[in-house]
Length: 537
Ligand SMILES: [Zn+2]
Image (cartoon, rainbow, N blue to C red; front, side, top):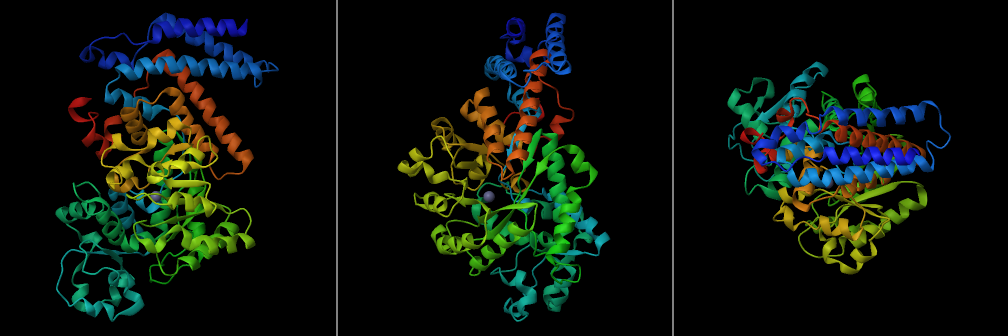
């Protein structure tokens, strides 16, 4: 009887909820506010009452077979609704839908790559309160660059580049170590004029044709310089990301964030206890806690450095001793052969003898040419692979990765921006997805390409026609592969699925929510490449 009632309600609602195939110009507003008729509201209210009554009366099998069937009913009814919606929605309407849609996890993001330029500037200026001041290179005085090399360790940042880099940003302590001539190249961030501020912000955005991976790997991070060594800035960037992701309906994120290596205002290295407590305390403040988003951290190492093995050992130690850090990652451009995966096979095997339970998510296959990096990375013990763009060319491995257990963290916009694919249409993601290789969408370094997690879902649906089944499976896969204790993971997945059901019922009853200030929230990448901003609203 219950199921029958539900089914009949579903069918009635479906027959009315489907948008009329009006001409595009006529339906822009109507689709968003789709089924507003009284009868539909009554249907929805009856359905809601039915669920609430069942919950309130503690019906014995509410969480049993009937509940599962109810969920399946909602899912398949909404799947049909979504097919109709996707076929007729404008890009802006699709973006609205995806913005409001509950999302699983972002498992692949670097926190210092996820802070937008305007946030960096805001946090840098605000960090004066903790005694920091930052200086950026606004001119080149031709001081004779070798002179900086004579400064030794203290000038490590400025000696890693082969020529003076405009808008490289250093802290006050480092400025003091420079010769007077070199010091004259720098200006306090507090004193920048409007044009200099705009140029500084642009210098850490990957937004011009031809900038590509060299600009990203060899200049953007170097320009950020000492800002990435301020734990207050990094903690605030983390919290701001948590709040922004929560606003997009994300339930969990697992950023790569260093537990140590931060500097005090006097330039001295901060002990790990101090930096960890700055980061963890910030995430325990009410704004983040109340947002409901869950999180854990990964400790990343730079794989091509001469001391990468020592970093790796330290990362295992950190993950084993810091409760919020749950996994080790290995980062750095893979076309630098010095960081190839097999270099770490013996060291990781040695570390596994000592440390139990250290999870590994490792970048692999983020390269142009076919090679064995994904295969070798799995041999290292990774259960998740970052990117795996060239998995498509390892046919035997691809075949063996169908239906799990390893997950590929897909970064569509990152791969486009760094030119690992020439167009999104050429990305191997749909092949992985539809072969049954577990995949999830993530943002990687969204601060540098000016995107959010909604944009990743948007380009996936826009270019590859994802179904509702596929969209929700992406989120479930991401949560299922989170490095969380099993009981916590089940709780997060249950919360996500309940939110997804509520969303489906709400949209079928009332239409796609109309996010407030949505055009201000849409970021540059999506505005510049798709018709979702400006005159296309
Ligand atoms: Zn990455």
